[in-house]
Length: 324
Ligand code: SAH
Image (cartoon, rainbow, N blue to C red; front, side, top):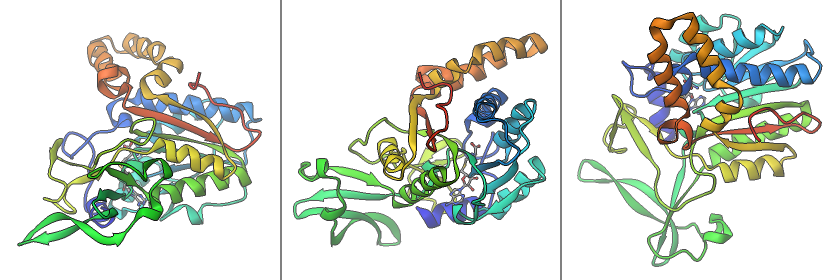
C-alpha cells in the first residue's frame, strides 16, 4: 500500500473531475475558510504571536492551505508555512498556490522553535495499514502474493498475536482488523511536538469513531471503486482512519484531545450556513451550486457523518470551536 501510493502520488495530480477522487477543500472554499477561522480563533486566543508555524500534511493541490491562510490572514495571521509532502509532482502545484512554502519529506525536519498549528485533510487515510486475520492457528498478517501472474491476498506464516489489541485477541476465526504503524508514528510525533512546542492540530478524515472488524481497503480510479490489487500505483489506495487509536496515542504522548466531531456537525458549529448565505448573496447565479456543495460537505448521507474532525492540542492551549 505504501509503495503503491508513493508511486501513485509521485506521478500525477489525483484530485478533481479529471482525477480519481475529490476532497472537501476541492468541493468548496467554505471548508478551508472555516478551518481558517478555527485556526485564527485559537491563535488570537493565545495572544496572536508572530512566532508561529502553519503546517499542513499532504496538502494535495494546496487549495486548503490557500483558503485557510487567506481567511486567517484577515485577522493578521502571517505564519511561516511548512508542507509535509512526498510527491514532487504535487509540490510544484502546491508552490503555485502558496509560493512561500517550505517543504518536508516527513515531520522530523519541522522546526522546533515555535508552536505549530497543524492541519491534515485526507492524509492519514493514505498511509499504509497492515491487515491482521484470525486464522485457525491464531492471528496472521494478510499479505499480497502471486497467483499465476495476478496479485492475490494470502495468509502470512508468522504469528502476529502479540500486536493484536487485547480486546480483539479472542475474536472468532476469519475476523480481520487493520492497524497502521505509519499513522501511529505520525500521530505520536504530532502529539510530542504539541506537548513540547505548543500548538494544535486539526485532523480531518474518514472512519468510524472506534475500531471495527473488516477490511476497509479501497481503491479509487476515475471516481470509481476498483479492485485494490488490480492497478498498483495507478489507483488511490485508502482505508478508514482508526480515530480511537489516534486519540489514544495523542493522550499517551502528553497532548490533549479537544474532541472528535462529525464533519457535518463541526461545520455547522462553525456557521457554514451563515457563510453559505453570504456567498449566495454575492453570486446569486451560483446559489444552487453553492447549496449542493454545502450539502455534500454537511449532510448525513454524504460526507457529514463518515468524515470526522479530530482536534488535538498542547497543554494550556484552548479547546477549539466545533467540539461541543
Ligand atoms: N489534503 C489534500 C490532499 C489529500 S490526498 C486535500 O484535502 O485535497 C493525500 C495527500 O497526502 C497528497 O498530497 C499526497 O501526496 C500526500 N501523501 C500521501 N502519503 C504521504 C506520505 N507518506 N508522506 C507525505 N505525503 C503523503
